[in-house]
Image (cartoon, rainbow, N blue to C red; front, side, top):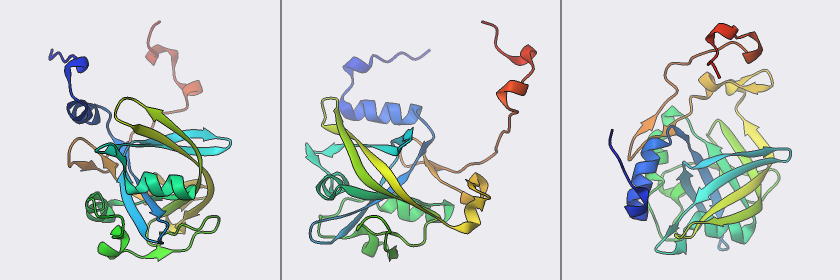
Length: 209
């Protein structure tokens, strides 16, 4: 068994190791807007649901050379952002949106993507993604020694393409989301495994205490 003492690793080495372990990670494709009106777009693969009442999403946002990146800076300044969910057809654009441009350059324009107005906030959303969630900044929690921040937003409004809906729910197979693996690798849903509700699971297959 390979052994690693994480206390002996640098922040970059630890990042490479843990992002290969914590997989798959869903991708939040976030749009923010600067004070000058430039719409920034960047992917974040460390995000999750924090609460359902109120509906809260949390995103881990690191720093570059000790400075906040455009997404974090804009989100904190304006108090809002949009989490867009891309699909398999958009993986190349998602990947290239991670390229770091100066604040005055819009990744949306560079990648030839379309914007649409939001309903509850001023920051626009991506027009052609299957799902967009308009968020108002709720809380920012600093973690660790590198200046990383857990940015929590309250979801105010959801836009969903009817094609990905199955009644009141999102159909994952229709959504065709992509996820981040280690390094430059991305994944899709692949084979789905359905299990019966826990209450109906025979006791014989449950692990013994």
